[in-house]
Length: 356
Image (cartoon, rainbow, N blue to C red; front, top):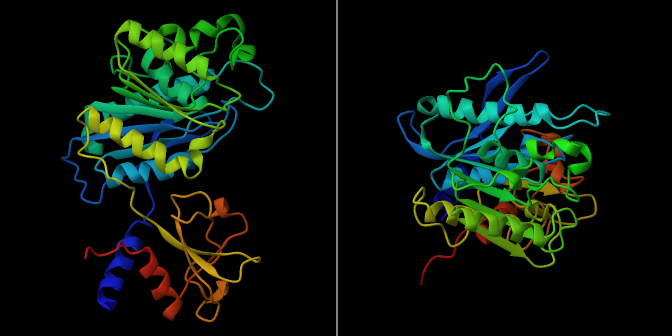
C-alpha cells in the first residue's frame, strides 16, 4: 500500500513542472511569450492537435495564467495547450484594441509556422479564449486585416476550430466594445464576418451574463448555421460572466471542450471525469485542518479537496521545501505540506476507488 501511495505521489508531483515558455514576438519594449503544456509522452516528431488560448480582461488587462487548468487538462488528453501573452490597450487609451488583434494573429502564425518544432499538426490548431480573449480567438478566424506589418502574411493565422467562453464576438451598436470601436466596429467584430469559411465553433455562455446576452449567442449561432459551418452553443443556467473560471463550471466546460475536439476526430474518447492533476497543501488562518487541493479547481469544493482534520502532522510553512509559493487563487493560502498519517489519510481519500 505504501509503495502504491508513493507512486501516486510521484505521479502527482510530476505535474508540477513549469510550462515551457518561448518568445513568439518582440516589440519595442517587451518580449511576448507562449506558455506551452505538452502531454507527458510528447515527442518533437508528434503531430498533435493544439489549442491556443487568449486570456480575457476587456482588452485592457488579464493574464495568460487564466487558462492554465484547461491547458493542462488538454495535455492530459494528448493535445498541446498554448497560452498567449499579448499586449493590452494602454491605460487611459480610449481607442480600439489594435495591438491585441495584431498580437493574436502573430501568435497564431508563429504556432503554425513552428508546428514541426512544437510537435503539432498545422491543420489541427484551435483558437480559444474567454470574454475579450474569445473575441481575439474569433477575430483570428473571421476578420481580415489589422495584421502586424512584420508578420509573414503568407502564413495563415486562421484556426481550424474555435472554442469560445462567453466571447464578446459582436461589437456592433448596443453591444460590448462598441463604445470603444465606434464607426470602426466592422473592422473588429467577428459576428459581422461570418461566412462558409468559418471554422467549427463551440461556445459557452451563462444565461445570467450581463455583458453578452443569450440573444447575442443565438443570433451568432443562427448566422453560422445559415452560412454552413458547425456551431455548438452551450448555455448554463444562472451563470454570470466569467463563470467558466470556477467550479463546477470549470470542469464542466473543459469536459465539453474536450468532447468537442473528440467529435472533430482530434482526440480520442473524452474521460467521464477529469483527473486530479496537481496537489498542494493549502492552510488558512481560519481553518483547524489542512487540505490537499487540486489546483485545477478555483475554490474549495468537495470534488477537489480532501481535509485532514488535525495539525499534529503538519510542517510549519518555514520548514516547507518551497515556502511562500504563490497560489493566490486560494486567498490567504500558504504552501505547507502534510506529513505522516495526515498525508496518508488525505491521499487515500483522493485515490480512485478500486473495483470490487
